[in-house]
Image: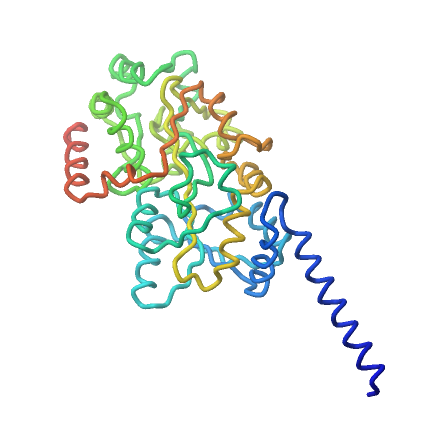
Length: 365
């Protein structure tokens, strides 16, 4: 091979390299630092990102597809449930065999526990400035959704105009309709459901009349369930006529397909939880993990989540519901649970046991 040919090959290789670099640079979202191109390039070389989650794949499929289409990075999506994701992270770290790059879970208390115990990595996302202050904990844990907690009801058994307008009205409603509601009220079992425990304990912290509600449900012979889906089926069938403290983001989708199912929110108080995302310490694919978290928090990623029925924490998302339009939808009383150490209050074993004992006593069990 002569010198001229070698020079031509070197020039061609350099041009290809420049083109590849330019292509990556073009992928850097507007407003991101210029050196973010190196994160994208390194993420593509890693080729995959492993996500441990409690979110059903169907709800996040649009997000996953959009991310892979944009960057060509495969997602190893592991739906382990809230407790499963938490326990797997701990066991892998103990064995020095970390597999998860990102942990994305609706168990806000368990996610915060992982952070406090040192399993998360600090990462200042370029999207952090676009999030509400309550959705960012020290640039380690980010809120990716805002999901209301409300009620579902059987529209053949209850008409909307008869439903309680406020939280206080709900207690009166349960008392005044005890005969008709006996054995036909459902709610989460806080002992078997992480979401149920978070929902009920958050109410106990923020509502002085929570135990009055628990007693009213107990007097109506409330039945307790470990999942929202289980409650949905009983309300659709008419076995129960109302389910209280259910995941409202699911319910808003369910009513599109079930004509005898309605969703209802108290106008004065609608708490909302968030699915929290973190990059793990010692993530095997750290750049892909950062890229995935940033995409989840971006306007594009948030739009994909909203299309999947998970309302956005951003106000600029116009697909589905965002934090502002969701507040309007629930009647103006949206109260997101802040991503802070307050979610750990009932992780104290003594407080947890006391709460569950008080719960059983209020229900008369």
